Figure 1 (cartoon, chains in turn red, cyan):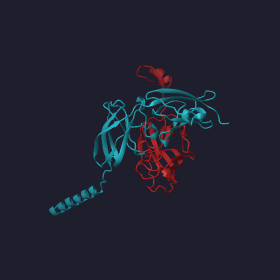
Figure 2 (tube, rainbow over the protein chains, first blue to last red):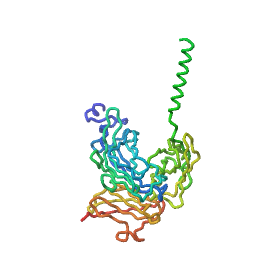
Figure 3 (cartoon, helix red, strand yellow):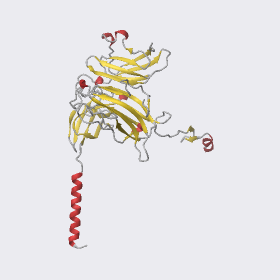
Figure 4 (cartoon, chains in turn purple, orange):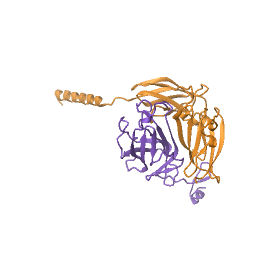
Length: 173
Length: 219
């Protein structure tokens, strides 16, 4: 059995069978699991617009990277937030269980009592970069220019929702 | 070491400890303990509890008895919610999923303290839209869905992505929806009468409706 497994480049299973070897690769970019947006249920009349993208870390061949990996966000090209509630803060390094995490976009983390009027259209623009956290050098996963307002969120210059499975890289989605 | 030197060292140690204490940041979070009940007021195990009033926040899961402990909750007034899509309770972060008459708990979180006995009572189960989206040749197409509710106006608008073959949880209230994909004409439920009463779809709690959607290419 061992010789057979070796000859077929497979791995031995507990039941004595042989299965193909799964190659563990490295995080390379992101894939859209689900993209959704709307006003918050907790305060539909007063809350600011929210877009949430659930993302999956994938390897260079678009296969899901299921190991828990730590990811972070950085901002560049950040403009002044015209809502007057301070500048946005990027997400610090945090573990993405099974390689999944949620990217939340809104003009205020406090959705319900920020005092920002939905209809004002205030907000800011920035370029968001998601990357892995590593002391030995981080890998850029996704770069996206965004315009975040009190009543909409635009990514890559578009208000469109990204279909499930869309591959997002350092060149956009 | 003479006596004076020893007392100087002890005093220096006290100064350092005091300085360290002064620099310790005050906690800016608290905790919440409670239970999630389903539409029949039974404990719901395996539900995900989240803060519906924050764009980002901690999450946790209920145990076998439906109980949860949510830590690192930012101080201030927060509202909690929960979901378990496999049991028909949707991720109701967005207003489209509001059930009339349903009230979720809101309370003040104080630094370093625990709010106890919070009850999240979920409303009736959602309905299911089973979608099969293809082009005219029958090839599956991933698309985006736009939902609206006449009772909520623009504030009930909700958009999301979907797989070509997907099951979407929807609230058991009247709503409209449109299927869109790049390079294809929008598909409206109710066809050309989608904006009047005939364009509304109403599903009962727990009901499943299967829709085969064929998208036409943009001319």
